[in-house]
Amino acid sequence: MSESPRKPFLYIVVCAAGIADEVGKLIASAQERQWDVGVIATPHALPFLDVPEIETQTGFQIRSAWRSPGDDRPLPPADAIVVAPATFNTINKWAAGFADNLALAVLCEAHGMGIATAALPYVNSALAAHPAYRRSLVDLREMGVLIGSYDPHRPKAGGGADRFRWEEALDLLAPFVPGAEAAANPPPRVSP
Image (cartoon, rainbow, N blue to C red):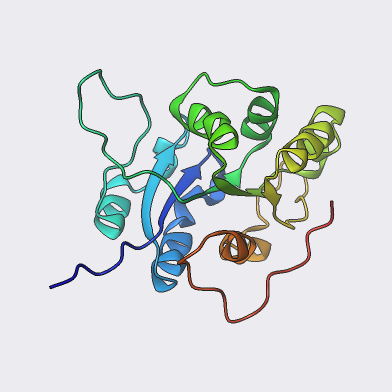
């Protein structure tokens, strides 16, 4: 009797933003496309999440801190990574090579390991106007990170959740991950 092939494994890195509580939409969409999913949250993202609900949905504990030496690895190796919502802070620290929390360390390592990675920025227009943010997006693209198309929302207004396309990350990754079902629609073009 032969074993069924392993599904591709997706890490979803969640950052602290008002729409983080909707990450279940991305998890469900990934599972519909035959991904297994594990969530890694930045330390500040945890209060935004319904941890028990996400852990039930994925079948894995949410990771937010390093494991102790000798502990089992709680997640299988990633075939791909999505950062959503990707905040101003995480984008800039990631591009600069900071690894001061588990989520950033995973993202920084992914580049050297050749893991396909997509980011869906979620920032307001005032932060998006900062020169460091623009440089960081350029640097991440040069590293091969696929960047989503979200248009920044107004400062101090929150929102934009209705325009945030969680599944766009899966569309971006589909051509780069063998075994992942491609989306019904072709992925949007990403400008360099």
